[in-house]
Length: 268
Image 1: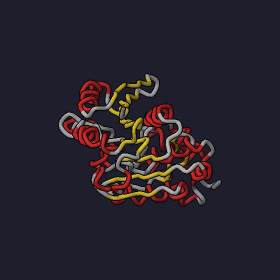
Image 2 (image 1 turned 135 degrees about the vertical axis):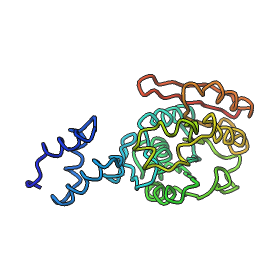
Image 3 (image 1 turned 45 degrees about the horizontal axis):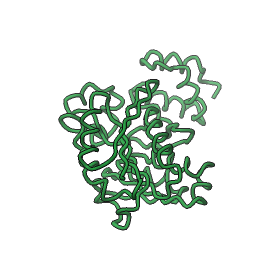
């Protein structure tokens, strides 16, 4: 690797507009096995590919989540959704990750319930399911959830899930798309050009998928089970209304540091 200097990698990333050029350079240098591979990785990043797609993984709540090209990259703010789910039902036995993408949320929730990684989650008897409409996301999620014994299903929201989960789900985490259609063109190019539109576009006001999830959730939750959904700040009142209309006892949690807004609905 001596033929490619770290300073030249930093300079290339900085010139491409990477804000955290030094940190990214360190990760790329560690990932590359040869100077040629490093050159290729840097070229992909400079061309605009998300760092996580270039590396092949994303860090999420202490886990290394495999992220393939074309699959939604888990955001750090979504870690707050996981924290809220674990706080609400700390002894959950059945977990569903809907709109799962890479399966990061399901993996983090199951691991948190187990208390000490994948092996502990399995030993604690956590039953984990995930679903997504995008076949690429499903393939990626299967890789990430295999060690947890998670089952990943392909299909549109609840239609993808086994019917025997109805009335048994303790934690239903749904990281639904919530960007209004008209605002998708305003997203950073990394998201707009490299992540699937189905994982971003939430309809006219960004809440189309959230409303569908909220409407069906009461049929799937166990008594005391919770639905946790991330949404935008200005969408919170309408999201709360959708949860309440479904008969869920609803509250909102906010993390100012991560600019994260999570709506939590409990089946009485």
